[in-house]
Image (cartoon, rainbow, N blue to C red; front, side):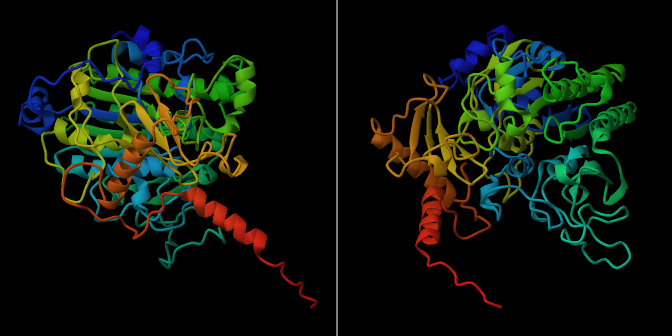
Length: 520
């Protein structure tokens, strides 16, 4: 399927692929790599934007996108566009946890929301990660960008952790005992999250404070420098580039201001797209284009901070024809741009409508390198490597789980999607508290015929609702959604019905007698 048909393919997403399995999973992997040296393996670059909506990329939604994204469009013409790719959550931290571990974040202490730093790392030190796995099989590994998975800042003289209450921003010189270089990466340059973006970190030290407007140019420059440093190095590398844009603060550089004609957000999207162009130029200049698997994607949907309503009035729909945006259970919250170029494997201008998730990177690189996934790792990961050869993905997973900012669950199996929420489950109206008590407590949509999630079929298909709910419960209870030994979640109880909890809390607050005023 050619890339020109990507937009129509999205409308048909959820339909079973016509691709068929012609060989076994074991023999299939042998097509890609011989069991030779690490030098024969491809470089892997994973560029993940922050809050870039599906509809922000012009080639994915040409009818409703008004922001030029020439480099993403060119990448799509050179590789494969996935129209049904998702993050494990509709917000930052959970997505990043799932990407690096192959495991849903709601299996940890993080049941909703995001982390804010100044705390122990969310990824357990003993848990294998994509970079630690690749490093063990001969890769050099680097992260240039946003971490947002917690780590501590220590006073370099006393070793005592700094407190977030005492420091709005981590001091220059602070040391980090549990950051990216302690979770599988050889090199880190970037920042923790948006509210501490001025604190520039290299490896395990805060090296300086810099204006936030300089961060995107910094990450662009450092990514190019890293690629250039590999010119005469025969070892393959894994470069993870989690950008902080176009997330807030929306701060396009002076040379990009006014470029889009849609305001600062459009300008920032264009500058973000340019990072991809700079990376491509560096790869080409250093002769690494052909042996590099390059993925361009986002962590979740577009944020309300982009002024979605104003953009829509100018003809730009940040989620295309999807409903919702960042933080929501509807697909606008977690269906993402996902474009893959691998010249030796992926045919130019192709489109795949198979269902995948960011958690699938771990299993994919394991199959690519012909290595077994370690025990107690990647419990929610399925390799999408077959799809890159236009074959059907071989999976033991019944479906994938979606999770919202407030911790609401949804479950997607083929064309069917079940939401355990009355409304968006996130920030888009109607929110949970906006819905009447008489509203259905679940939603069921046929994504093959109703990609905009407008017709709730839960009353018409109660048996299907129960079937999907049972599968979700099983995936939670087994500690994994793929075949394998039963695993253990990090916490004993994971609550499915967030709405019931919210209603109980609200009811309690309304019935509780007013507190007596202290006369003192």
